Amino acid sequence: MSELQHHRLRDFVAQLAALLDSQPQEAEILEKGSELLRPLLQQDDWLDETFTQPHSEHYQQYLLHADAQQRFSVVSFVWGPGQQTPIHDHRVWGLIGMLRGAEISQSFCLTPHGLAEEGVPVRLEPGQVEAVSPRVGDIHRVSNAFDDRVSISIHVYGANIGAVKRAVYREDGSEKTFISGYSNRYLPNIWDLSHG
Image (cartoon, rainbow, N blue to C red; front, side, top):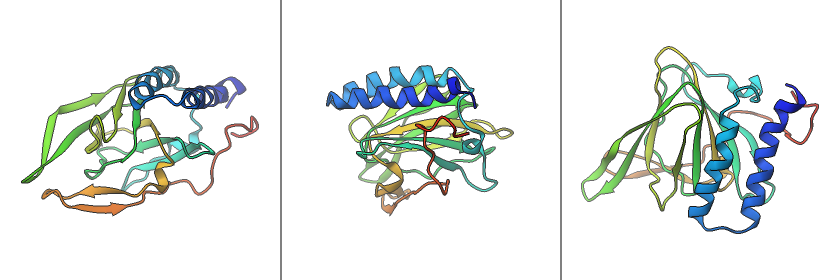
């Protein structure tokens, strides 16, 4: 990875940290954070190959950066062909940006009779960003749009998402709590230009 390529992620992290330093409301974080994320998604040359590797049985969630103050984290989601998540929530704000391939997100809502689909599925193509949060809609299922290739999305969350207690949902609306952790066993250091 060249120094210029390495700077792309580092610059995004610095810009997002500066935005959060101003203590904006969530709506501003989602709007301005999306604007900051889009340029990163338009250049598919910066993500280290280490964090693009699929697993044959389930999606991978690689930590790219965790803010020292636990205000946000940046994660690459790697989808093998046909893979999908269970229906789940996040419990913090999040931005989902498509880097490579495509993914489909179906939102759900809780009703007195259990879970119900909310709206039509959203297909994310490279460069596009979708927001989630308890305020704007936080329960969904995400799947790779392709059965024959890998897709990769970059997710930004308003916490160290691998340590957040959240839930997957059954059809009757009942919850099963979980803490996701990360697929990588070591944490990358984006401030070290010799990395990669």
